[in-house]
Length: 371
Figure 1 (cartoon, rainbow, N blue to C red):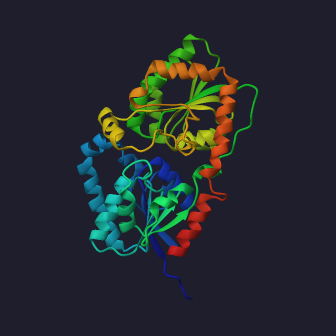
Figure 2: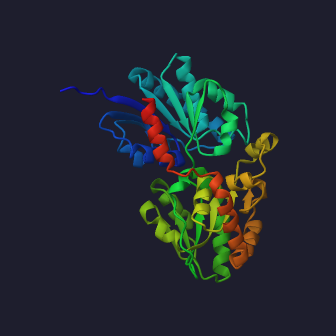
């Protein structure tokens, strides 16, 4: 009988938030007639025919760290470029990690690679390095946007854009309770984020214990980071639950009073769950100075950016100290009005970053029309 020629896709995500998108797209694709190779985390791996690297191979973040491990990435890009050219994929899908992916795509285009290349999750050109929009337009065929307001930054004749919405579409609001069991600590999805932030979690745990606050600590993490977190919390006196079982997260989150969250996708997920939070983040000092000069936005969290006010408290960079964190924590802990106001504001601004249907469904439909 007549057999359809299999389509070949190369997919590249180098960090956890991109891996989540990758997994959700691949699990919705009919892979009978599509072969997928690429770079992914462990959940996506089962959909890949050839997996070239794992997200754990990409540890660094921030200008300084990237410069220090540059030669490693140059080698990876060379290797991937060779694989892509040899296999001549029908479509290349890059997810997030704009710096790494941009360099990979640039090297492909220099080698006259003319097949379609799409990028999911636009670089944050509205925050800094606005010139990247044009550079992306020169290399990519299409960009899938998580936020509707990004469209105006990517209007170029040779670039298509598709608004897919943010993956928090799939997260459910939790049910309100009269009492909660946990404070959640979300220390980040990269080793060096965890290392930078952990002393603040230490200080907070100490505060919770010495002030006999009757709450346990819940830390959701990833399989490859669990041992690190266990090691870092060994000396804690507050009862602490560390879990890497994503399926069970919902039931724990239902019992979280407040979250202390590393800035990024996690803070949006917590917001969508309607858990009051404090956002923390720490860049390398030199990186911070450089960014201060070029950054266009006043906030780290996208909900604070779209509302143009700090609806979710954030303590970042040189501003982040143990005492500041503890003070903000005290202010929110027993103040129900403060908690409710945060949630009310969040729900007012969430529609501006969510689509009215699943971003994964929109993405899959669009991908199928491109191959």
